Image (cartoon, rainbow, N blue to C red):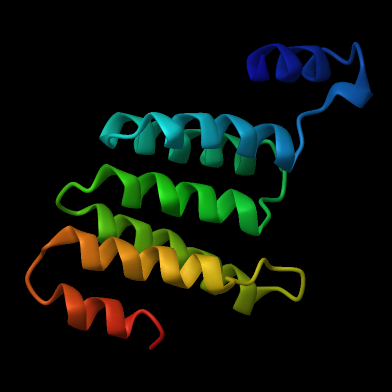
Length: 130
């Protein structure tokens, strides 16, 4: 459906059908609900597609990708979730209209570290706010 919306919009057939942050985030969330590394990679791919389409992600968009990575529970997933969080922080600092992380952003990454079982995961979780 997202592909169809993009096609219709890009062909100039109907400007009102342009996918927005809600459209993209809904698809990302569907991938996140499936779980697993492939799902997280697909959620992040949709996020990148959203940015490429000049559609500004909102806090829910970022949090959905963060959650998708945390849900995998696989090695490296907490680190990847934190990278997405840091990207959000960097964009917020770089622009007045940047999306700022919220409590869900931070606690989801912290949860990811706690669940990861990786060495120093408790320290990593504590350092999320630093």
